[in-house]
Amino acid sequence: MTLTATVPTTNGSRYLQQLCKHWSHKFEVEFDADKGEIVNFPMGPIRMAAEPDALVVTIDPKPDADIERFKQVVADHLDRFAFREAPLPFDWH
Image (cartoon, rainbow, N blue to C red; front, side):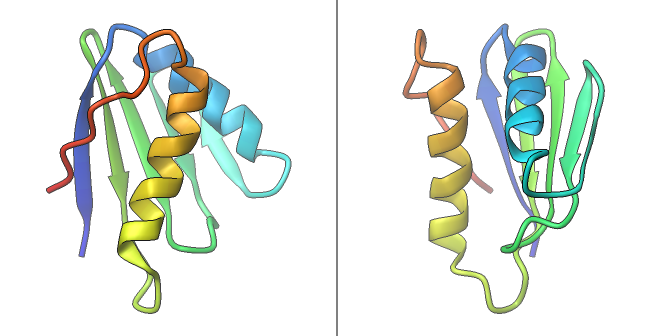
């Protein structure tokens, strides 16, 4: 099951780069200014794409992952980098 949230922000590129750099100390990460992926996150891969007015966040929970916890971990970490506009609204579907 793949879950996606389109988070309204004009700083999506900045936030995805900050989060990828933050997690690159622990996990395999690939990113540029427009997209990023945390490949081997323990609960499942995380992909992000920056759009002009949003950050699109996609998670692919592993079968044994706590999905609510996974969503909360991602949102909490992004909110730390987006402290000026946090909490960011995540509408997962």
